[in-house]
Length: 388
Image (cartoon, rainbow, N blue to C red; front, side):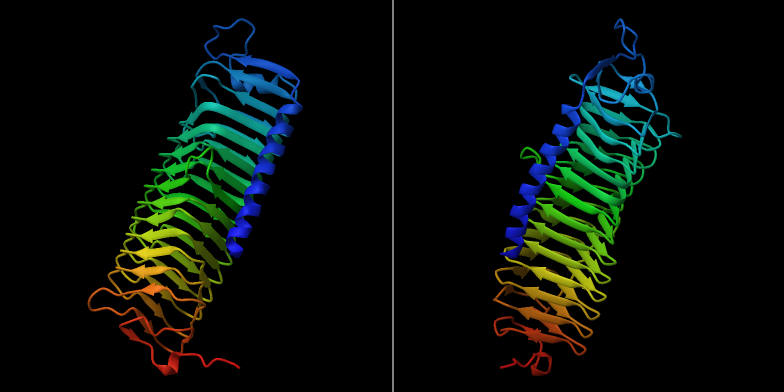
């Protein structure tokens, strides 16, 4: 219930943020310029870098052809790049295609493809950076790298970059209806960042088929709505939140990853509602090292290879009830090493043949009715005495 209320407020905030960002960027634009890198349009600039260097702030650039360029945008504001036909901007594998630093209200509205550079976009100490219908692909390291910036990507694709799709440190990153797929290493690596992942014009956000893992967060906070984290390889994880991170996810799925679906560790908080965590190789959810896991209802953790949910090393699990843990090849739910379980209302927890629905060990404590969870190893020594 708390999670649903928070997400309603989040949707309102994001809609307002999109409106303000877009309105600010375009309302202040007073100049127009055309970029035709073929030289066929009279009076047009023949490179993007030339156009940026020779135009003032508050300019809209219309790109009418493919271009090969490296573009450096420093200490600029209210520059808008627009294409009404598909265009591709290619770079050199030794140089970033776009570098944006100490700037504000820089927008790109596609269809625009950015490829072939060392990194597609490097964004540093900048605010109000907006990429709409932009594809960032086939770059030699990362698709997008941000540092201490405010960036929004809308209905785009970050794919087939040699290393990680998106690397972000500090600031905020909002991804609306974005697909992050087929990158050589991680889909997203987030450090000390506020991360948002939501639908965009009814397009579901997707992180899939990346070479090592899906999303890795450290010292970060994240809100995910209807996100699909699927089929990431490398025996690592679908989602890893560690070192003082917090993630709240409603809707969507984490499935088919070749490592655990979720790792929540090192004093982190993970909260899920109305979603599926299934078919992962390595188990459903691992929570350890003084971390917290909350299941807020309608979470299905099924068909994973390994334990459904593991709570270990002084960690805590709380369930609001109405969740299902079943069909996993290991025990359904294990609590170990001075950890706690708190069942506020009943869940459905069943075990496959030869395994336990509930397995309690090493000084852990369970609160709530566990009578229906069978078979189990969780005697009275593991059950907390209610305080009256």
